[in-house]
Length: 207
Image (cartoon, rainbow, N blue to C red; front, side, top):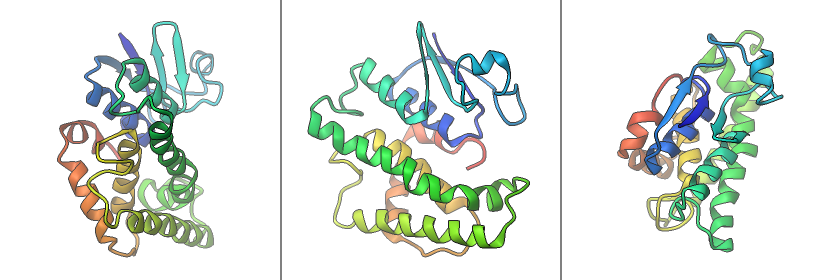
C-alpha cells in the first residue's frame, strides 16, 4: 500500500491526499513534521534530503515535491483526466501547477506564516506587507484569468491544476488580512468545495 509521510496541516500533504481521493487510491499516512516525528532525523532524510513533507513511498518508488507526487500518481494510474497524456494538454495542466509553486506559493509564504501560523520569527512588518502585496498580485492575475472560463483552470474538466490552485485559493481566503473580494476566484473556489474529495481532504488542518 502507498505510504504518505506528512502532517495534515501541510498544504502540500493535502494536495497528495486530495489526489489519492480523486483517483480512489488506498494509502497509509504517517505524521511527520511540525509537532510530530522530526523530518531532520536520519530516517526521514534518507528519503528526502531536504527534510520536507510530503514523501511518497509506492513500492520501490520514493518521491518528494508535492506537485511531482501528484503528477506521478495520476500518470502511473492512467488518469488522463487529471493529467492528460497528450503533450499540449498535459503542458496546460503542468504550467498552472508550476505557477502555483513559483508564483502565489512563494509570494504567500511570509504572510501566511506571520498571520495564520503565527510562526516565530515571521514578524517583520515590511516583509509581511511585501508578501501580502505580491500574493494579492498573483491571486488577482488568477481571478482575471477565470473571466469567461468554465468551472476549471486547464480546460473543460477537473485536473491536477485545480487541486493545487484550489488549495492555494483556500489559503488565500482563510489568511486574515485585508484583501480584494476577487469574485471570480470566490466562485471558482466555491465550486471546488462541493467535491467530496475536497470536503475529505482539502479543508483538513490549518490552511
